[in-house]
Image (cartoon, rainbow, N blue to C red; front, side, top):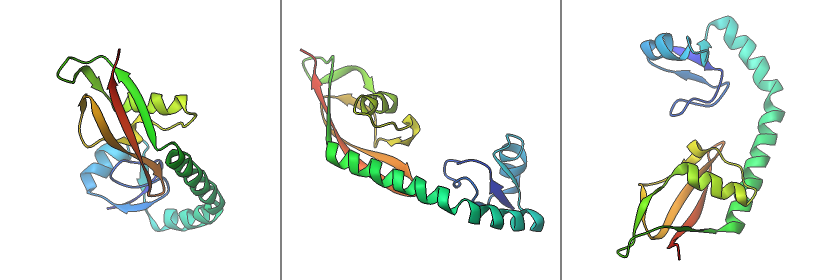
Length: 149
């Protein structure tokens, strides 16, 4: 079944994309939550007109994402202190939310769901963090976790 997305849907598509999904997923989840609408012929014609109007908005979003990517590349490394045992294991863990909050201190605002970790950060060391900035633009950042003194 083809639908038109009303907002970004993880692992499905971006706002205003026309995507094919399983019928149950569309009827039972996306459409009732107003995340999508049916892609009838009428709606597809309206969608084409709206897409032309939104081309400038997309261009601005792309520029913002590129600027953000450059800022992150300049930053390169973020260091954080955390309480840890003698063997280097953290008391707790560092989550995507923690990384998003660390980036906010450097005036980089990213939603925590756009922070991609390969696994939980539970020990001292250097970790590579991937940040999804939109429009298939990703930036990489190194997170250095050190023991709190």
